[in-house]
Length: 301
Length: 301
Image: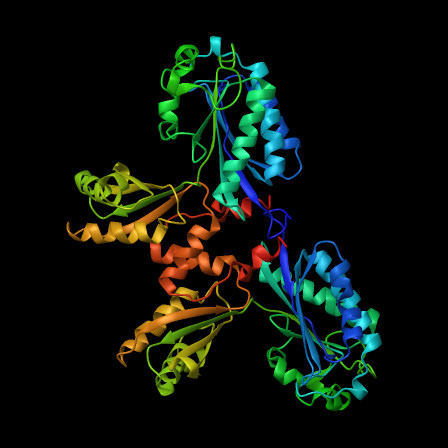
């Protein structure tokens, strides 16, 4: 991998969370493909679902995802599928996430290429969603998925719900699939020195987009009962535009009204390096910093 | 490269800054060796010196450095060398710098292996310096180099200056070489909203180690004449112990006495990722962050 290499993340969700042998079959292409890293795959038996996280060069990710989809379509039968998580296909959703040296436009293009091939070659109808959506009412995954597998055979014939690629009818055993591009999500929580959940809730409402706050911030109050404190739990849906430090400082600002202070924070799961380097640049006031100054990234040259 | 791979940096200084063909011969092993990245090599004609920066797996770095030393010893004749920079050998100094997954002890061990081979096989006397030094008076490179190439033939016979490895006399054309391990240096400057150099100087004196300040901080005042401001220019010689944010906040604290504020900062040259991630963790108060959460590092697995 070179420092200029394009890196895309993909988090396909498969509707199989119980049969370990089938899950292993499905993830096999991610292990076998050069240029792809299988970062995680966790199955949930109650949800009867497996969420796979892979990352790598766009072409390698494209190839391995298509192979995994072909396998999943063969081994998963949605007419026999039960599980608590809403789902509409053997492969339920395939988001592509630009991580390095890639514009959103390129991730959208990739999602459309993959969607086209799933539709035309593999024969499963595809709905493009999120940034790839062909119409505003198709951006939201929950809206596309409404009715689930069982309702999709009819829904797909409604004027508003013709698929973007593939056959006009659902695949008899694999249903339909949503494919799209989105920004990486940064899960960031800020802890407050109070046990009053209503304060965390009130701050969350002001900081988040729907309450008049930051454009790419979702937020809610959460109790950390064992620590007797509360936190503002946030999802930053575009950290390049709603920076981590900005969300942090806005929580601090709103907390003042309640005489409450920040006593810690946490980053949950994976995070792009730039999301944190940006914070160092902001708080130190660093001018003209360039990523190529980071030793570890130079090793990738 | 895996996320656990040990990475060492090496910055050998060669006493040839004018003959491009010779310089290319010397750096050739760094281009040719798998597992080594040649990050930079800049020659200075006035200094008649070439500073090479390489990084990679310890064994690959060891091998390529030894090959480059052998070439330099063949092609450089110190009896004919002239230049403004003090120097004592065809290869003047070879510092090894632990970057990832390596303790200082391992870098010291590596420097001693390389030193032993330069002394015993290549036949150039070696002084271990910095963290590898065999006695306190040998830690400082300037003290070892005092007298330069021309004085070394005599100095090496003084009781205090027997070499650590290799022959008891200098190599007739290649002189001697210093080999050792040190921490990466973080060059960090903080700008102040004043044009009064005496203020930057006064702050530098308080922040730096010799003035009673931070253990791993060197500092001085510098004028940025075109911007009509001054800066506290610092070298952090162990960022794991004297963190960037700590040096920054100490400058801020001392600046208050003069009614002066920080108006920016800069990181010069290469910096380990951790030096900046630490700052984000400090200012945000992030708890329990683990490097394996950084997406880019996961690509290295």
